[in-house]
Length: 86
Image (cartoon, rainbow, N blue to C red; front, top):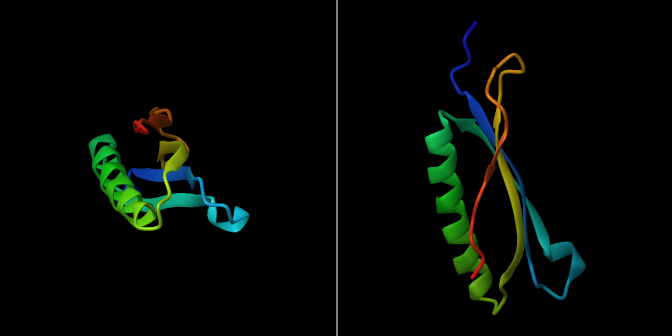
């Protein structure tokens, strides 16, 4: 049976919040169609996340997110998604 969704976005993003529980957030998107879709969904999420934390005068400190094949038998390897922290 072929999977409808081929990839999962998984990882974390962190900010410089003084409250430890609010510093890092898990990123998880299970319904991703392709590697290109991974990049688009991740860039969109990061744009919204940066806007949200900027309203609280915070900035991003760390990002580690991967595009992972959802089929364990896939020949595709996980790909680290890049994002520049300015």
